[in-house]
Amino acid sequence: MTAAITRRTFLAATGVAATLARVRAASRWPVGVESYCFHDVGLDATIARTRELRLPAIELHDGHLPRESPPAVLAAAKQAFASAGIAPKGVYIHDAFTDSEAVARPIFEYAKTVGFGYINGGPRRESLPLLDRLSPEYGVRITLHNHGPKARYETIDDVVSALEGRPHLGACIDIGHFARSKVDPVAAIRALGRRALAVHVKDVTADGSNITVGKGVIDMPGVFAALRETRFDGLLVLEYEGDFDDMTRRMQGMQDSLRAIETLLA
View 1 (cartoon, helix red, strand yellow):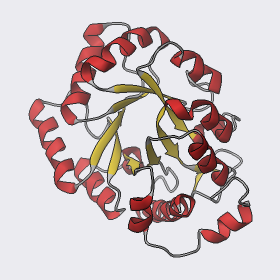
View 2 (spheres, rainbow, N blue to C red; view 1 turned 45 degrees about the vertical axis):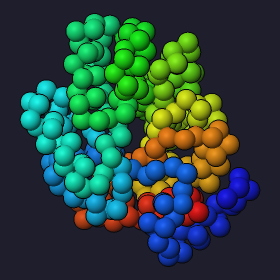
View 3 (cartoon, rainbow, N blue to C red; view 1 turned 30 degrees about the horizontal axis):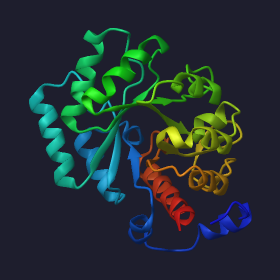
View 4 (cartoon, rainbow, N blue to C red; view 1 turned 60 degrees about the vertical axis):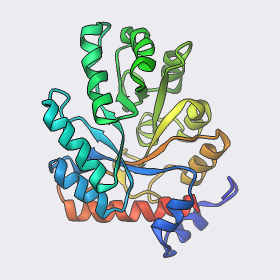
């Protein structure tokens, strides 16, 4: 697919039935899910829903597995992921880090114990030198997440300036939040794609509400063209927050979004 594809042909293509497993297997990028999509159920049900979506990877919200959990709970969670064939690629922890090693080390230990490859969130700027130093020690990367209007890392420059001179930090590009902040998601990927470990794939309406991928205002063909242009080699993370209080409709929205993503990957 090239940047020349029109929005009309993209929307038409989303209605073409194809096998999700076949296209995902052929894709250069693994596709996972952000567990906040299942904010209203526990970890076991989250794993079951992820399997229902036939997704091989997950970015876990730490609400599903608190970092203060006893070692036996963390071990059981790790085994549950392995048994389900789901890779726990990353964990979202919003704002826990300070410039204190006493605070940072237990969080890194938690991530390493479960097997998370990255910790996603919006750490305070004063913590970044410490995180850049500790990351290779634990083999766990830190990704800066743009969390929407007035967030610590709202703009492209906010993220670029934070990453400068810190090779062990990366980005998690949330295209929906960039759109909500009136930042072009395509431009964000072109600026940050080489430093991104993950991209949160979602779509939004003009007023910023979450909607099925391909039905909102984001230039999805442009997004995927930019990912190819920048040689992005991380995780695509589906995050669907529509139908927030209706799991059945939410699952349908996620299935529909995955079909759209499948078309973009083809």
